[in-house]
Length: 310
Image 1 (cartoon, helix red, strand yellow):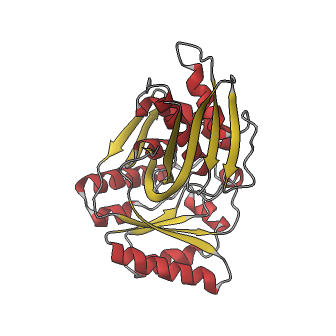
Image 2 (cartoon, rainbow, N blue to C red):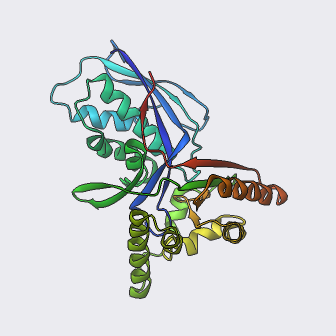
């Protein structure tokens, strides 16, 4: 095999109460990376499609940084090089795991070209190197579901332990991405570095309730447990119409909603496609009526994760 193309899905991370540990993959929206063997040693970014603000310098691009991390762990040094064509569909700064999608696609494609020396789980730490370049920390709550698919829990970082969670097949997510800029660095900076024991206990209870609700397919428990008392109170201030979105979602039968990743995207979980569509239409109208453009996505949870498409 001399070339490989991989699609990596966008993701919703944190999922309300699961700050930095929970995430799930979306269908149909994501980044695509094409990797080709080259006779010239080293990594080269041939082109970037769909974005103008992504660096093409291999040491500054998440795809090639993640790919280099993989190559550095091979027992045999590679004499040939690799070129990359990156197609961006996930906007940077959207809160939908843009850097994670690109990093995930890059390492999965390169692994295929090398004859799959690493398992999908083994690829997660390499993709995390791309995340570190983008956000300053090696988070896995986006890259894990993008690579593996489904709903994932990062049970531990040292050592890295990723758990695939059971979830109800009926779950449908509506995601609205208002076109406002929320930088990940800024959204992290405003978080409180210390929280009270009472707040911590509430968050732990909600995380446990969410995982239990997913496992038991208990929609009421899922809805009650999405509430985030750690990040949402401050991050929501950066997102226009956030409280209105929550009110509309609740009134229209949504199980619950919260911020996707660092924002500004907001996700709403429902138990039917009909409810999800109705909520999507209402949220799109809300932002349009307030002169804010937005993207709206409807999705089941993506079971596949990264897909080799060529």
